[in-house]
Length: 353
Length: 285
Image (cartoon, rainbow over all chains, first blue to last red; front, side, top):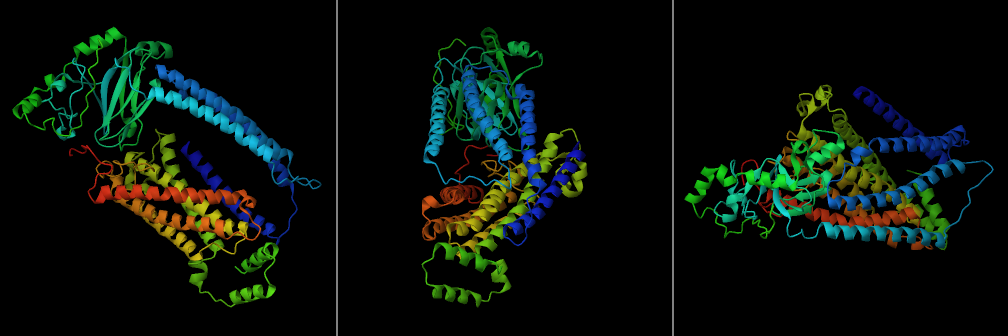
């Protein structure tokens, strides 16, 4: 396969060189120092225009249909549906304009090819046409932009007060996630406290941090808003959850957020896709180095009861690392929170989850 | 080169027809006696058509390099199972176990993007056509400043030379994506290509931006000031409008890019922290 493609590249390279050589002949014709009648090649090219349109159009249509499912994973969040609607509205408008203009391009190239007894009709400008073809796209674009802006303000607006909060932290080359524990408050973390064991940089002198727990995969309850607090430890990463239509950059030194509401549990999605091994995933979507391509984390959408059960079973970081806790107790002013630390706290939420 | 004079005088004769004939002849007379050395005529030429050809040839060279780089990473991407050992004679240590080194892959992507956008599109296409066509299509004798035009090409050449050399570095060329987002591009610990490769990228870009500013000022001035008699702005061909507005946009945006690159240079070499905060990487703060 590779050999074939390389061979094709070489052939095309020769074609390019041949064309460059031909260009030289054409420019000398243009400058008048070499005359040649317009021959068969012009007619052949005009027919090829039509052939290209038909073959190319068919290939494009086939490829689109063939890859449709890959380009459109089933939607699993509420705002995802709104985005989908906007996307297809735009695509249809663009698609119609695209089809009309491309067909005109190729058909007119064929229809008005050179004929010895016919000269092109020249007109310098037509203000009326120009106004029409400026106004219509302007109005269409303005409406699309306005609709998009409305959606955007909804998506990037504040999360509902009862949202489940969790923090996702990107690092080279995996994702770490922590939950706020029973007090529903994420504890203070400080990058100065990070080491091999304390990967988040928990400041265990802060009371809210004592019950935070780290999870190996993200669990979220179906039908309940989820607020992701997103941060990074070293370089730019990006949180990309394709099925939920979520994307947000993870910036070191500047926490970001994104909230969404999942609408399908993992089991429901497995049934829908007929794939018992399916897992929702969080993939890194910004080049971050050597392991960027493999940087992902699994997401499980639970029924709300299962989520509560899972939540209750998790052990906090402090509990699982008593020696780290001890080192904090021994040095009560080890990076006290009074410093301008990377404070990440959320207002206490009253949810039962 | 001798074909230059007749074309110019024909343009001037048709449109700017009120100049007295004698002045015209003296002007031509003067040029015919002006002897130029090989260097000033062909290498450091101030004639817009020669400069355009220089941009064109250099642009074609860079298009070939950029295309080659993209072929390399596309072979890896399109056939992930296949072995790339046969490229070892060319790529040496960058081929590991039959696959491209992942950091080198990112470097290929970065350099391909950089080369295509800056060297091929901006210099090779915009530089070539603007230089060639603006004086001809507005009825000017040459660009507003032939000297700045010449500098514009040679700064581009210098920038290209540095970028080309960076491809052969031990630690690899710049590898943080063509948008070179920091901190990946600021910290050599994050990816090896952010060491010397990134420094050379930034130097090359600085020279390139200077080249584009010189060129852009030239294009704008020529279009505004050197249109021949009777050529109003609304009679300008659309190509000239396109080149003019491209140059305006370039003049507005390249300095911004330059200042961002400067911030990055300061973060990398002078200990500032415009883009760096709260970072723990490679086991250290």
